[in-house]
Length: 371
Length: 221
Image (spheres, rainbow over the protein chains, first blue to last red):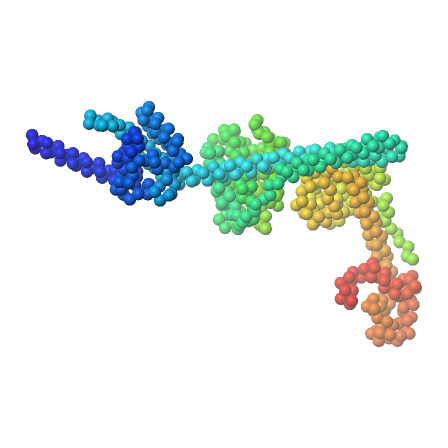
């Protein structure tokens, strides 16, 4: 009997040792807590995460370290876990003892209640997700920036093409009114003269309004910086990653491309537009093995970027019109995308062309001057 | 003085070419030039204009943004073909960069639509008048050149010395001939060239840059 107890005690000892090794070596911050958030146990990893010495007893209540701005949310979530016995899973900020703020992913589940238990306990882990959060924020900022640029560009393009389309008839009105004024002068008809002068004046006035409107939206000046075009392409591919998951991208880079003075965000807009169009065209045409081939090279005094797909190509009768504002083949499209692309490339003193390839796809050629 | 057979030397011989892919604009401008009594031809297609234009004197009113061919490209094509017709550009955009590029390539003016047609008429008038003056100058130049070619070698020598500002005595020294001979040649020169004095001939030679010697003249001065 005594032997049996002895052996059981030994086994228990071994098990306790095992358990201890596990929680102290395991690279996860582990803690045990009660309903009030008091820390009944923390492993070394948890101490380190919170900026405390390993084995310290300072770590009293995990809820107190929650960032003041997240506290209300976390307290509510914890209450829910306690009340409804659901697992706790939250992303929030903590304030370490050294003042540093970390983003953590905290999880906790309730332990099985044993006979000798005096209160309900929970086992949980903390994961440092600061780096992930930072990257996510960066992506978010970038997306917002791109969206803003896209919006401004669209407004600018709409205003610009509207200006062009309205200025044509206004020129006709103004010129004819001027000619007719002279004719009215010859027949001495004062009222006709005055009327024509008023038409003329109003035509100029309308022209003035259009110019002001156009200037308002086309304030988007280029922010040119020395850039490697390969970097812009890499950046673009991360931005459009979710749009081209079904596409096999093949990139043939000239690694020795010189830096050129461009606005990288605007040029990225051009690439995004063309790549998204290509991916959509290939998807709509149910291309079995869609390939997007991007090539960069230098040619005389230019850098050439070629973006080629193996989609259905562009109908011959519309290929000259695809860069015109308001031209679209999509049900939901406004027809500004490629018009904006052309404006951006021309603003860089380059040119943008497109042709159907022999293999049946489309190739967009972007030419940007080296100097 | 000299009678010259003048080509293009009247405003009536000048043509205003209008190139805009909007037929309404072409028509309105046609009305404008018709009412001002200026000869014009309007094209709604840049390529058509390039096919038909053969270097006639006048000026070109050109739209920048056309569907088939941009006005700036048409301008560059004309330059490549060595046509130096003065160009007035029209744009609905008023793009500064475009204007700079066009002006660098020699455009005379840049108008933003809708423009004051009186302004356009004045610009066109000035360009055409300048053309006429230039043609008159060129005709005169050719005429003087022809007459100079008829001079004897010795007479030409004396003219060149006179252009350098030398008096009879130093010309005689330079050419190692007598003062009397120089005077004789000078008399012949004035007679043949139909001028009152050698000084007047020198003035004409410089005015019409007969010997393409603007540089040389500068050196002498």
